[in-house]
Image (cartoon, rainbow, N blue to C red; front, side, top):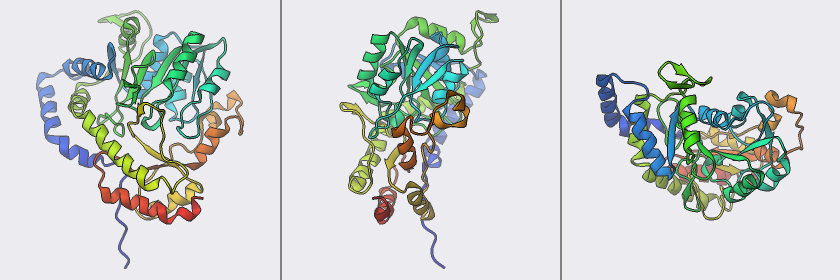
Length: 374
């Protein structure tokens, strides 16, 4: 019998847990003894520690990255009749949050090399109904925030950064999440800074927005049992906050380890695939996901999978063409770059301290498929 190919995971959370188990479970026991499980001391400290790391004045822990987006929109008073400009090349929640608050997502096309929303396309989409721009730091690379902020200031609209995949990414020496009106983070288990469940975070320098967010995340309550508005139940629990605080202490090492994996991929793949991850000048990629573009993507994916390499397609269909938004009347060809990119992207395994032999194995397999990548 032929030996089975070695399995290469897309992400190895089991190895991470083994390294954290003793310290985290010690914190869990402490929390259990204290009997305070939601919005306690760990959450308060986490908020300050992350705000300090990001270089922002305020930090608000919430229940998920989606809630971070929704609450940011609500805190800015965005709702029915308003428009928010967003990329169609993203996880659904980027647009879903806009729809949840009753506003309309207006999709602008992306740049072919970085996958970021194209500032020139944003400018064409701005109207009298535009209330915000929602740039996505896709896969961990910061968007062209200089151009986006200039457009926002000229049009007097807010900028809500979707930083779900970009914790620790930098743009001109400023952390993602500290550039716009608010920054929205996800702590889902596959993210750079992650918990073992759902969690999210909002950063801002605006004290009034921060205060409003704290009310909104707790059922609109200003005091116990006193409610000023309709809010949400979006509170982070102590056990997840304790884990996040442990991981945050080593976040720079985690980021460096991810960048090392990505650099090896870049070196090995630069002359093989159509494109390796790029990002704006004077910025730093966090590499939450390592995504290439290849011709005949589906055949390449099948070949890698058959040889034990776990890969993903992020994302197979742009949001403007999803059935949920058929009422917006977008058609094939409206946003051609996004549509082509969705046909070609393939995300490869990446996680801190991924074994070098696994990286090289992935590259060797892609090399063998080079004839169908042209």
